[in-house]
Image (tube, rainbow, N blue to C red; front, top):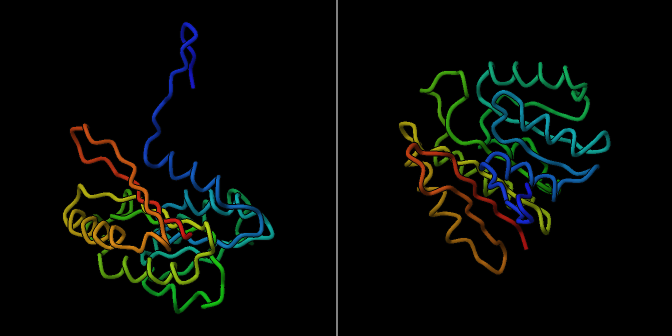
Length: 197
């Protein structure tokens, strides 16, 4: 925040920055977290720092380039020991994470791998399968954070499917936040946060 002439100015955060603010609020050392789309490893590293040496992060991505980039980022930050990377789609979370494993936070970056093949994108059916698997393991006050990129071919279809799903979640079990800028020329990503009550 900045102060000018005694007036406090609030800087609105991007969806990405806000996702990190939410992670900071919910993830503690010793927690278990999931990066459902590791991409270039930025969120994986961020979560690994938050869970600390006593916690764990499971990261998923179907692309070998994403797994390699994330491995490099984790090596550089000396965080490999608290992360397991799976080169498989996030729809297989239920196969890889025990049903009784409590999850504190999961993050998704929907769309395509930045700098990668734009033809390889996340899909509505696989994304919804992953969300449901995490919901079953999510602890009270735990969060599922989705950064939704809708400006690429196929993105709007997935965004609508996810929005339809989360809009209809029982408000007594989950509360859902949508955070987005609505007056920008391009299609900026927006954030959905699902918190278990």
